[in-house]
Amino acid sequence: MSRSAHPAGPRHADVLPEGHYSAPPADLNVLDPKVWAQTVSRDADGVATVGGMDVKSIAEQYGTPAYVLDEADFRARARAWRGAFGGDADVFYAGKAFLSRAVVRWLHEEGLNLDVCSGGELATALSAGMPAERIAFHGNNKSVEEIRRAIGEGVGRIVLDSFQEIVRVAHIARELGTRQRVQIRITVGVEAHTHEFIATAHEDQKFGIPLAGGQAAEAVRRALQLDSLELIGIHSHIGSQIFDMSGFEVAAHRVVGLLKDVRDEHGVELPEIDLGGGLGIAYTSDDDPREPHEIAKALTEIVTRECEAAKLRTPRISVEPGRAIVGPTAFTLYEVGTIKPLDGLRTYVSVDGGMSDNIRTALYDAEYSVALVSRTSDAEPMLARIVGKHCESGDIVVKDAFLPSDLAPGDLVAVPATGAYCRSMASNYNHVLRPPVIAVHDGEARVIVRRETEEDLLRLDVG
Ligand code: LLP
Image 1 (cartoon, rainbow, N blue to C red):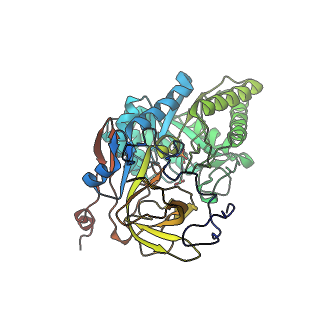
Image 2 (spheres, protein in one colour; image 1 turned 45 degrees about the vertical axis):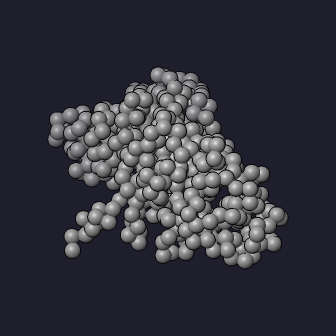
Image 3 (spheres, rainbow, N blue to C red; image 1 turned 45 degrees about the horizontal axis):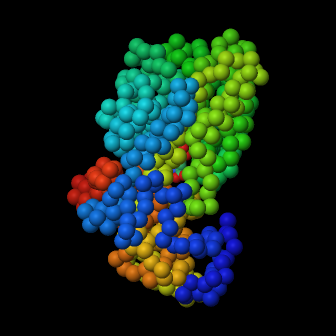
């Protein structure tokens, strides 16, 4: 993964160590619009602003660390996804990326549907008024209680993930006197080009029913026999942080192949196909994600072409982007604490959060960028590693990045593109309190998820 070491040294190194970095950017003060939320810029004093609010005021009012989310950007991205497919497809936002009641309301207002994968996500969605019929319920090990609640509330679809679940959901639907709309999640044998732990469509894994060996066809056979299930389609999710559409192409080809087999065997044309989520975003300036309209065009063309070849009516497509909607809309705002230059290596910059608010670097070797946001600086770049305050040396937020060499304790730095899978995967490791999510819009900031308090921690500890 390492890119070439850059010959121009920071103040503490003559030769830069191996790492995940390219040359320092020409101007460290520039906030690359590729990785920052849409309304981010700098004011006349050089302080970064978002949604018309400057980050120093946000930090003063709400403290750090904090996730700062650009509501206009979130809505714009949701709308772009919705608009890209027009009326021909359904967009289900994947709530696992980040879910709160405000987010549910924005999605509802922008005409998106919602994918949930636990009772907790379902409860959040329902409590914020998302109509149950616009919710898809996922998961490889849904509990009986979760299934009962989902069916009882009238969720639009349950995505069946195993043979046992086909029977379980059918049984509960019958008990509740309803016919539940379901899809079957299959694994099509495509391995997305991404980190092993987050690639999900190859067969040696816990999700879905393999297409290989006729298992998916058998699952369809069983589901079609059960009166309390209405099988509406086939689901495939091939992985995460994907830039290359060829994986979707192979997946669509195989899913359509199954639809054709189902038509040939049962005389039934299943009306829907869900291609999942997984579309990549820019975490650093080196990433080049595709726009929703390009993705929509590519997916629609692939499915249409495959169906024409198989002489099938084109099914209604649905997609489940999570990261691609919320990821770029937020950054994590930290205050700089201890700064520790290590000669010949790099400068360790400690911030007031860490792996508890962003586990992705430690878990997936994820790459992020960082910038000084409380001021600009013309000092020469230094190679920095942004680390947290946890008792663990793997507590790294940004492995390698350049920051101005006059960085000082009390400065504010921000890590962009942390809207997805950061707050939702946050922990209380070391009893560090989880940061709030502050939504900014048109010069106003409001807390949509408040900061955790010691009282919150102690409330769960019943002694
Ligand atoms: N649909 C299904 C069935 C999924 O399993 C997922 C993600 C999505 C949609 C949304 O994928 P997205 O568009 O957000 O990539 N914690 C990992 C990602 C795990 C994703 C799991 N499933 C990370 O931080 O990268």
